[in-house]
Image (cartoon, rainbow, N blue to C red; front, side, top):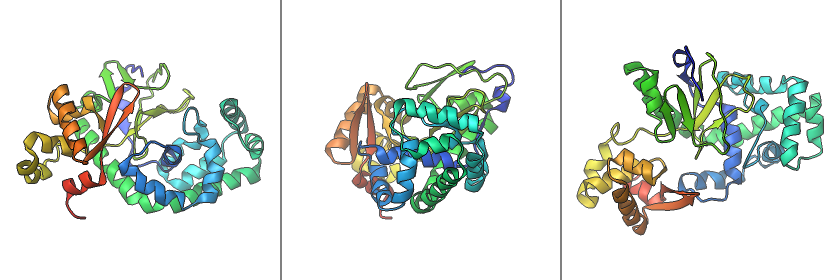
Length: 316
């Protein structure tokens, strides 16, 4: 993302979780087969709720690749109903183009043609499914979603207030690399986006788990959705003192760092240890059943197991 004059002044963190971005990204997580302890219990509950709504939404929100921009309108920042109203008011030309693009890489149900034509009944059916899914699947988890997003937002905006936007953008390393005037992300495809004075809306998300996500249509307000993360040990150190006699100070810090999943290089940076030391500590914690490690292309991502979470946080 290429910043020009004025873009830093217009760059901000969203006020809270976006209900439609969380809908799309949580649907993708329901399709995901890779185990992740922090989401596995939610997946089990979600699969038993909102099945009729999920059947309607799933074809429009595939696990990989493109999904239509009209499903995540900027108006959703004002709440679910405002977002759904914007979805139902999508211009027919945009519907036709985006549903057509989705159909190029996916097999869509027969009603998708009516959706692309702007059929009122089909749009209302989509709106009903969005409401039902949010009420039955996201609603029970919304306090946790909002809390994680709030912690992340407080950390980013606090840095922005104490310093400036340049300092805030640096808090995203290594997930995002800020090398003024360019913000780089690990993205599935090579792409350049020019902000052209419009600024950037950064949206922390509970269900965005690996790489940030952006809208495809560059005429829309520039948005970058990223995985919300709890403050790292330098902001929140309380459990380490309790665990240090058991694990040692460094390993306790490593375990605490994993309150949010991260790669080995992220673990080294956040815990303040070398890469080889981070890998060694992760191996010991994995052998004790406190974390699991999964390979993602050329990286290894570490996540607390329920046992590790219980040890870190104590009985709930």
